[in-house]
Image 1 (cartoon, one colour):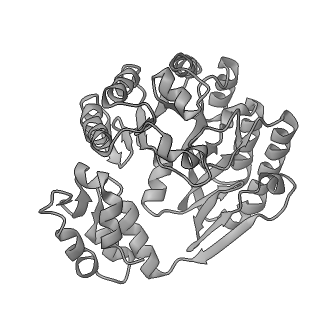
Image 2 (cartoon, helix red, strand yellow; image 1 turned 90 degrees about the vertical axis):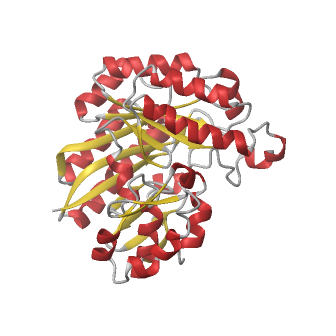
Image 3 (spheres, rainbow, N blue to C red; image 1 turned 45 degrees about the vertical axis):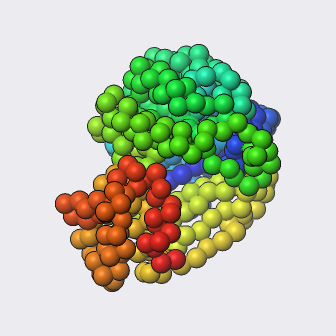
Length: 374
C-alpha cells in the first residue's frame, strides 16, 4: 500500500504572537473548540474513502496550539483516524504544544491514545526576547512542560527556537541553544524570523531592534556547528535531530510524498493535485466547503518542486532518483546551474547528486531562484 501523511490543523491559541501569520483564533471558548472537534471527526470520516489503498504512517496535529483542546477532544480525532484509515502500527503521531498548556493527566491520556511525538514551541530562553515576540510563557514553563511530558511517557520531544528576533544577540542565541541542549530533547528546530504580511511585526518592521545580517549569518552557521557537537545532525535547513529522530512527517513535504491536510488553511498534495482550504475557521465549523484552490501539478512543475524541496535537505537531490521520477534529465537541466555554485562554496557534489553546503543553505533562496524554472 502507498504511504500517506495526515495533517490536522487546530487553529486555537491563547493569544496571537507578534510575528504569527498562521491561521489561528485567539481566546477561543470551549463550545467552539468542541464544535471544531465534531467537524474535524466528520471531515476525517468523509475523506477516508479516497484513501483505501494507502497506509497512514504519519499524523501531525499542528496549530495554533493543539494542547489548548481538552485531551479527550484530541483523542477523539486520533480515534477517528484509527477508525477510518489504515494506520501503521509504527506511525509517527506528532502533537504541537506550547509551554504551560496541558497537564500530566492529559499528557498521559494522549500517550496512551497513541501520540508519540511532541514539538514544543520555546523560541527563546530569554524573557525579554519572549516578550518582544509576544509569547506569554517563560523558559521555566518550557522546562516544566518538557519534564511533565517525559513523566507522561513521551521520549520523542522537539524544541522550537528562533534566530534573528528582536533584542537577540549572537551570544543570547547560543545561550538558548546551550540551555535547550542541556535538557536533551531528541530534535531541535531552529527557524529564522520572517516578516509575514499582516502581522504586527510587519507593520513596525523598521522599528524593531533586529540583529544585523552578519550577526544573523553567524547565528545560523555557528549554530549548526554547536548543535552538531551536541549530537544534533542537520537534516534540513532549519531542523536538527539525534540519529533516528528526524521528523518523518516533515520529510514527506521535502521528499514530495503525498499528504492530506484537514481544517482551515490546511493544504494537501494527493493524487497529483495540490489543493488548499481558506482561512475560514467559522465556516469550517459550520460545515461549509472551504476548499479555495486546486491545481494539477505538471511534470515540469513537479520536477522543479522536487529539486527545490530536496535541496532544503542535508542529503540534497539524487540524480538517479530524479531521473526515475521525471521525464527530463537532471544532468541536462539542473546540474549545469548547480555546478557554477560549487567554486563559490555554496553547493557540493555528493555520492549521487548535489547538496547545499551550510553557507549555501543560508542563501538558498537566492541560489534556487536562479536554478529553478518556475
